Image 1 (spheres, rainbow, N blue to C red):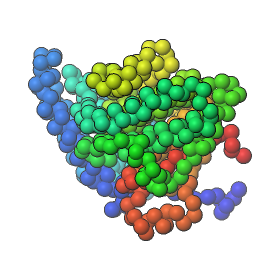
Image 2 (cartoon, helix red, strand yellow):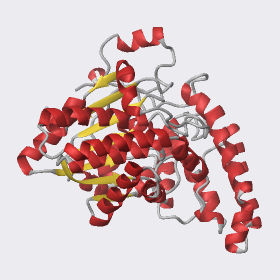
Image 3 (tube, rainbow, N blue to C red):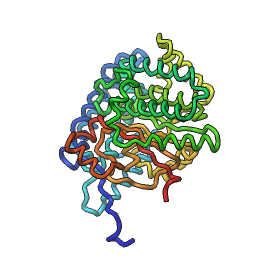
Length: 438
C-alpha cells in the first residue's frame, strides 16, 4: 500500500480543543476531584493519628504534593517523571519517555496536561495521587475515594435488594431451563450490568450518583437508548464454548464499585448457576483509580456487606458469593497493566502474561468508559490488533469516542441530543471475536 492509500490515523483526543469534553475534563472535573482528595485526607487526619500515633506531618506533606499537582494541571505544566518506588514506576517513566520521543525535533507540543493525549494525562493524575500518598506513610495505604464508594453502595440498597430478590427467583428454577429461557434472563442481567455503569463517580466528580429504582423494572424504558446491541453475539460465544467443551471461563474487567459491582456479581452468579460458565475471573485495579473503580478491598467489602444484610435474599446472595470465592469458582486479579495509560492493543507486548491469561476465556466482558477508550485507542475510528478472546464491551457513553454505529446514526443523535456522547443517557453492547476476523 502506498502512502496515498494509507488510511489517516486521527489524533488522540486531548484538551487542545477548547470546549471539548476532554478540555472540560482537564480544566474543571479533574481539579475538582483533586480538591476532594485533599479534603478527604485533611478530614481523616485524626484517624491517621489514632491508628498510627502519627500522621499530621504526613498529611500535610501529602496535601502539599497534591496542591502542587493541581497547580501543574491548571497551568498546563510539563508532565513529570514519577519519583516513588512502586512496582510500576519504571513502566510509567518509560511511557513518559516514549511520549517525549514522539515530540522531539518535530516542533510539536510538549508533553503537558492540555496538549498531550487525554487518556494518558487523566490516568497519570490518578497515579500521581498514589505517589503523593505512598511517599508519606502512614497515609500511604489510605483510599481517598473509599467514603464516596461506600456511600454509593448504601444509597443503592433498594435496587440491590430488588436485584438479589430477582436472582433468588432464578436460582429456584434455573436447573433444566431450556436455552431460549436462559437467553432471556441472560439478556436482562447483561442489560442490568450495562446500565449499572451509569453509577460512575469520576464523571460526577465524586458527587452522589447511585441507583434508586428497581433495575429490572427500568429495562423496557431504557431499551431505546441502547445504540448498538450485540448481546446475541455474546450469547452465541458462550453457548458455542459450552456445547464444544463444556462450561468454560468468563472474565469480567470491572469498572465501578457500589451498585455497578453488585450488578456484575449478580450476572456472574447467574452464569455459574445456569451452567453457562464454570468459573468467573474478575479483573480490578491494584490501587484506588478514577474515583470509583473496583479494588480488591472493594470487591471483598461488597461481598461481606451483602452477607451482613438484614434482607434475606441479599444475605443469601452474599453467602453464595463468599462460597464461590472460597472454592475458587470466582477469582479476583489486579494486574498493574489495568492502572497504566496503555491502549489495549499494547497489551500483548507490554503485559504478555495478562494477554496470555485472557486467551483462556470463552468471553471477556469489558465494563465502562475507560476500558472502552482503551479498546478504541481514544480515537474516532476503530483500531485493530487487540483480540485475545471473544470480547464484549458494556458501556454507557460518558466520553466523546464511539465506534460501530450505523451510517447517519451519530448525525441524527447530534441533532436531537448534542451531548449524547457524554451524558450517560445512551449505551452500547458491542461484541468482537478474533475468530471472525478475515
